[in-house]
Length: 218
Ligand SMILES: Cc1cc2nc3c(=O)[nH]c(=O)nc-3n(C[C@H](O)[C@H](O)[C@H](O)COP(=O)(O)O)c2cc1C
Image (cartoon, rainbow, N blue to C red; front, side):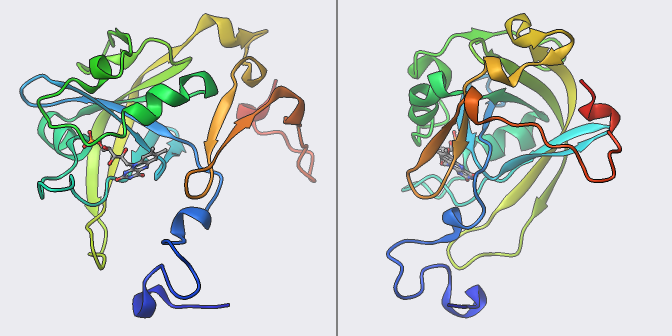
């Protein structure tokens, strides 16, 4: 089938739900911590998230819609506009329940890390705390927010940040590389589905021209 979302949206017949979450998969989860202007900790998952560039290292996430019933922008959007800082925390399989708990639409006055029983750790170059149990955390300074074209029912914003601090748990460093075999990674699939990336399913592929990029050298 083919459809033009500008004409029929993302839920044409025969789909029961918006299909978009099933079309670009798997996705990483950016578990974003930030502080409100009043200093309240916020933590929320974003699968419209990715690394943007390596030099300088930059990441993006995309808050959409508003908090149900309030008409307010999501805290992860508003906080970064107000304070200019956020942290990417890596979500792994063992943290999936805590991650889901932080998707709750809590009022801005609620510390979502504490509410989900997640231990915080301090950052070095930004004020928001990081998730202590995350194997990797990236401290980010806000670069720019781009408003995407208005949607049928929501407005999305691409929030970009430059990485100004990198935390890597020493336990996942082996012989000079970040050892993904030591992390049970989680991927966002479609609808309510997620996948665990298990060590036996990880393979290395050499590129055809045999040129190895410096960042890929082991
Ligand atoms: C795995 C997962 C991925 C999500 N990805 C996004 C996303 O990319 N953009 C978005 O606006 N909301 C996303 N959400 C929903 C937000 O996490 C949710 O609206 C959250 O309450 C926002 O919190 P905040 O108001 O504290 O920022 C996602 C939820 C889950 C569970």
